[in-house]
Length: 139
View 1 (tube, rainbow, N blue to C red):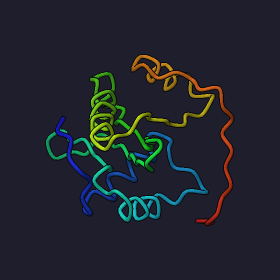
View 2: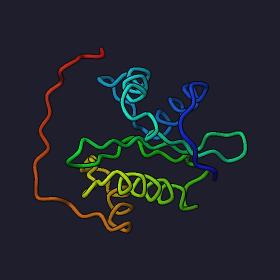
View 3: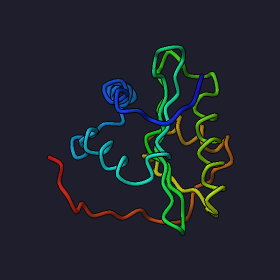
């Protein structure tokens, strides 16, 4: 797998991958999420390609205090090849280069397989409660 920055012609393949992986929710328009990411640190939106096929994605960001990772996705046909781990390590390296002291991410509590994946990479559950408030409604 080759890792490279997102390109404008990747949009349809990225959205299809996110749909395949169950990452799209009615309250998050994926096209708007992509456009928002491209307006802030677009170099931290990475894709993985196998030949001509886009098979993996990750979005990351750094606000000066914490780094965050979102939309880690790997096509079902390309899982168990360490592609997710490779993307996470690339993002970690990019964030360390920016002076980021900690990388955080959110996983749905019911997604035990993904929690186990992150635990294998050295991530641990923080003793926090995630709170959120929608400021802009996409739907």
